[in-house]
Image (cartoon, rainbow, N blue to C red; front, side, top):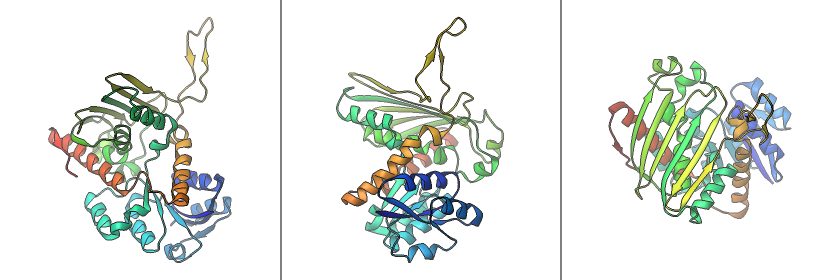
Length: 332
C-alpha cells in the first residue's frame, strides 16, 4: 500500500485524488491546500485528513509519497522538503518557470533527483505509448519527421494567463516532452513564430495564443509543433511520425467511433472530447500507476527530473526564438 499526501485541491488535484483513491494499492491520507474549503472537500470525499501544515505531512512516517498538484511557484520548495523528508514525489509540470530556480533545486537535491517523477502524462496515453513502441521496433524505418498538433478548446482566464509563463512553458512544454519521448532524441535547435489571434488578453502579458515551432533533432530529424489556445470543435490532439519505411498517426479521440449516414448526413462523426481532463483521463491514471509500480519494483522514475528540466530548456529556447526572430541553438 502506497499512502499518498496530495498538495493542491484544485481541478488537477481533484482528478489526482480520485485516481489515487481508485487504484489498488493506493490510499489518499492527506490533502493540503491553502484554501481550507477546497482542501476539506477533497479530503472528506476520499476519507483523507485535511491539513494546512506542510510539516504535518513531512513529519508523518505513515506518508509514503507525495503528489504535488499545487501552483507552479510552490513546486521547488515542496520537492526539496519532500526529499529532505525521504518521500518520493510525483510532481505536476513544470518544475518551475525559471530555469535558474530549477538548476538550484537540482543542486540542492543532488543525487536524490531520482526520487522525482514529472507529470508529463502524455507519455502514458495508450496511443502515444503505442507510437513509441512502434518507432522503437523500427516499423517506420529511420525516423525523419514528427508533426504534433495541440489545440485547446478555449483560452484560459486572464488570471491564469498572468501566471502561466507563456505558451511555450505552460502549454507546448507537454509537446516538447512528447517529442523527446517519441524520438528518444534531443533537439539541437529551434525556430518559433507566434501571434495573438484569439484573445488580446494574451498580448497584455506579452504572450501569444497561436504558435508554430520547428525543431531539428540531433539525428537530423525534424519536428513541427503547432498550438492554439482555441479550437471551437474540441480538444484537438494529433500526432504523426514519419520515417523511411512508413508513417504512424495517432488521431483525435471521440467518445465512440460511430459514424452516422442518412439522407441528410454523409459522415457525421462524434464530437471530439472537450478538454484535457477527458482526453487524457486514462493517461493521468496510468502515470500514477507507473509511479506506484516503480516504487514497488525499485525502478527509476520515467519521466524524471532531468526530463522536466530539458523540456523547460527547450521552452526557453523557443521563447528566445520568438522574441529574437531567429533560430536558437539549444544548450543543456
